[in-house]
Length: 306
Image 1: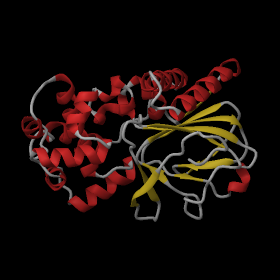
Image 2: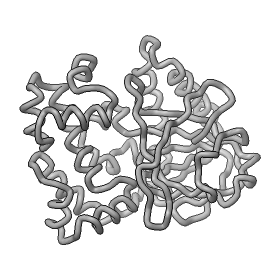
Image 3: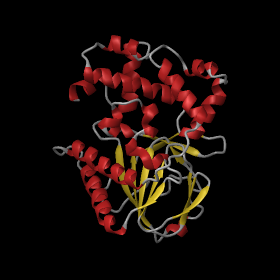
């Protein structure tokens, strides 16, 4: 994403893993007390030193990019996409982004909104395995994953992006989290309304994997068990799922379990020992470790502050 000339927060990223072709997949780094959203203006001054030499990379999170001023082209999952004024692009997890020459983009200006869907309560309360089918994320499931914002609506897009950046600069300000959620929701609604009516056909293998996770996550099933039940070796299925979604098989299994743990923390007063059993997370200690690694806080503190 990069560095802007003002105090807009940068997206802290680290390489989760590297694909077989050498493409790094960057992971979301959650900061305690901060919504899982970042907005960064992309312009000639942005920082690209962290990218590989050919700028080829992927994410395990979601990115909505609005092109304020076009110029040049980027590669999105193997296709060349020209950057045109007023276009919005949805970059799904695992999709490979590449720019053969950053010099081609020196006249372009865009806004990158990176987020995890659980920044929005209506998405946080459902299985992450169904996120791609949610109406708010319609542009991410659309053929081409891009749309043109009508010229009359472009000032509103810029205002929403500026508002989102401003709220994220002051996460401790009264109502900041609610404002971030509302503004991000408005952006996703606006992008979804521009999405073509015909979505991309779901990946059959990913659908099978997600169905199996949904069926078994509450048990002590492992990623290896899931792979073997579907007729694959664990290493092969993990590699394929990572390439197609930006996350490994274990990542998705853990994400589903933690989503259920958050629901139980929010809606019940069950102790951690019961929650860990009901989510397949083995024991309270393991639940605490996984929860803190994912959300930057403990389950007990998250429950108190919800």
